[in-house]
Image (cartoon, rainbow, N blue to C red):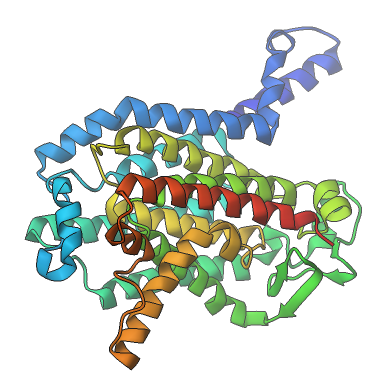
Length: 403
């Protein structure tokens, strides 16, 4: 909406200049700020944060009135962990609706919502958030921690992920990766964007340490993209209790990546990373997500008044995974989102070890529960994992200029 206001102002400003008069457009010349992604991204972050603060307690009271308390797994399921988390019983869940609502409103106001990258990330977030809402609702309605069956959840995640992946693959003329030279000419930039000496394509996979694409997998990039979205969504879902803080770190990192990838000199001449003239707008969405994360932490800090539930975690994971694809830094997500990866890997290793050797590697998976059972206080686990997430985010950004 703000960018449309800028366009309206710009037309009026040019018209006044053509007539050599000074009208309202010259008086409101500060509206030129709305042109800049950095300004609108900062506004989106602040707006999402303020919306979370403004509606946070209202949402919490509404969730309490609906009796959507967090179901805690029984002692038979989690043993000693049930004692450590017993105080969380009854705390309202589904707080992810606050994050999703704040992000989408801030994006509609501050971003260009018809931008293909912003649209696909927002739609992925909303669709997976709806799936998470159904899962949370079933849990609280049936008073257990089962929710939607794993098979049904995976099916709908696959549907959403494939739709997003196909959109990004078949809309190459919109995204600009498939015909970058033509897009650059139209945008007024130097023709012939290249990553190193090789023209960029949507099916090519890159990593910052290599200044040429690693491989071109063609149409197989569709299932690859889908796997990233599903994997990231589930990984964030496993990072229970840590997800909000880690979300902020990863969102800030990918906001920076999106901004850099959307500016020709920084992307092509300085960093040699995939350039796209439209992807810079995604920084607005990612900073809105970071702002909503800060707002959610306002109510989620100890003692927590609300949990985001699967409503928030599935939506956030889907948005982050889609954003990583949009900026063509899919593999870098393994580093920047290292805490999410570590949590998911710990579960896979635990399950695999128990099935093959009948022995457990960790006291409990995901791995943050292992440290709780080894004597770390829950607050220690959270803060230390957040510190690790910040370090990984900085390291991932530092890789952009190596070599």
